[in-house]
Length: 110
Length: 324
Image (cartoon, rainbow over all chains, first blue to last red):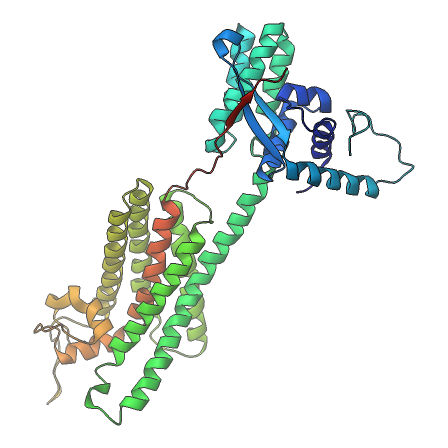
């Protein structure tokens, strides 16, 4: 898994609360990524087995909207994401100024 | 309403750049997000959401971007290495045939008669093994149209033949110019045979595709042999014949059998071609028919395997309770 900045942003957002399922617009808000960047990243993480995607179980008629797809880190994904982000952080210069939006959820939970 | 419709058009355009097996689910997912934005009256966000997906080159997902490159390299490897492998098969089979003849020649009377059948048999067996390897490799090669696949198989064969002919010409081998028309005809007809096989395989008619591919390749090889013989050996006596020797002619009536004659050194129990005609034919076209035999199995196997539709691998989604 090649860890690009968009991938790191998505992993940070998901690790902030690993048990919370996130839908696309939610992750766009948390990561500040446009949809055209976010969805390929999600697909990539799913293909690597780090991410699980499940359809919301609702009655679209009763809810008045179609079911959304929710994303959640898998058990392996949580471990792998923590390790990958820790390695990424270890590579970054200590004195490097913070890049706005790189850690959109504040202090990540790893 | 117009904004929603425009966003929908953009989403469907975006989905076209994703793998086919993912499109329906992606459109469903994106439509659900658009619905939420529409409910909030966030029209510009709807458009931005859809336009970003439509404009992003990531319509081919990042994880899949490396796959076509790997497939392309694998395809090039398979298609470029297979023809030299066929040349090696023909040469190796010739060496084995010579060794066998050296052993049998002094012991049995039929040693000469089995030379060509042995060469052909060994070549066909090794060609079939090569076809198995190529078929396995074809599962992960580039999928294109049947014509492109046929050309992709045949052009490297043509390239290999050109290199071999150039090498032989440099070594002083004579009579190479006479082989070129037959080889070109074989390559041209082989494209047609592989193209037809690919079209049928793509439609799921695999057995028929194999039949068309094999029969077409046989016709191509036979036509090439016939052209080479007809171009060089007259069909009827045109001048004085030396005493005690049959005329250097080959009756055209047996032309369809000449390919089998080259492979088996036999008339298959028929009166033509005669023993002298068989000698003339195999003296003129000796290596080419065996090379056609080496190439045919893998060429047809690849054309059929590469044209068959790939199985979809998209995982089935599971519903979950709606989060609060």
